[in-house]
Amino acid sequence: MTDVLSVDPERPDPTVIERAALIIRTGGLVAFPTETVYGLGADAFNDDAVARIFAAKERDPADPVIVHLADAGDLPLAARDVPPLARALAERFWPGPLTLVLPRAERVSPRVSAGLPTVAVRVPAHAVARALIHAAGVPVAAPSANRFGRTSATTAAHVLADLDGRIDLVLDGGPTFHGLESTVVAVEDGRVSVLRPGALTVEALNGALAELGAPPAELRRSGPSAGSPGLLDRHYAPRSPLILVRGPAAAVRAWLKEALDARPDTPLGLLLFDEDAAALQPLRPLHRLAALGSRRELAGAARKLFAAMRELDAASPAAIYAVEPDLEGLGLAMADRLRRAAAEVVDLGPREDPTARTA
Image (cartoon, rainbow, N blue to C red):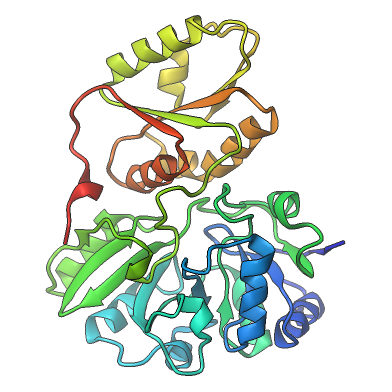
């Protein structure tokens, strides 16, 4: 069985942190909260320990993982030849949900980067995460703490549902704040490419770039060879097939109503914003709703996204229907996760898609 230790998310007990740090130092696996999602951590310098991450998650070895640091000053432990613009972004957004893809330092296990010469690295903005990394004394490699390809974990209970008995310890610091993974960027020749949208919005990133005199970030659709995690076409998926519907609101709601009316006696899940859910009331008894909140409050909706997907999936519906959010702010990252989770995408009309632009 995996041990679970509760920890105050703002003032973690040093004794509990040291117990977890000892596991990291001796090659074990510890799940811990960050401000984005729960991570599954191991010593990034220990090749065998990193291999245990992939085994526990059943993760594709071609999918890189992020290296977490306790402080920006530790960047030379994980990366080398850091471009000035990358350093400026680190100063602006660390600690926080920004991951930089940089040339990998020699001591970091090549398994972390799927054998690529780069490494994805960030400093988390969570007291438990930073205390653990500091106490461990090494950079901590940590993908999301869930089975590979499944919905990311935003609570300790989610971690245990996927990894109980496969890892040594879970530090339970309560639910995560953002509920979405970090934004991953590459910096090359004075330009920034967003490889994976996340909890740091592209708008906030571009605001900083403008102040730094750099051009706006480009949104790039890339495979795992880009050195970023979370870029596989099928990822973040529930067990029940998720059907993502995109297009004008009226067309989306009409399509959903017709789809639900056609299956009145079938257990179905609905992952919807309040505005869309209201248009479909009343629901049939076998149709279960997980409401994300208003489209105008995307921070709250993002925080609920993965938990709501897990809640619906636990009921084993025949399908889960979800609506794509507007492709701006946090909606861009939410749409990215929903598309990768989807078994089918229903496109009801032309709509500008920023993620389709190439660098």
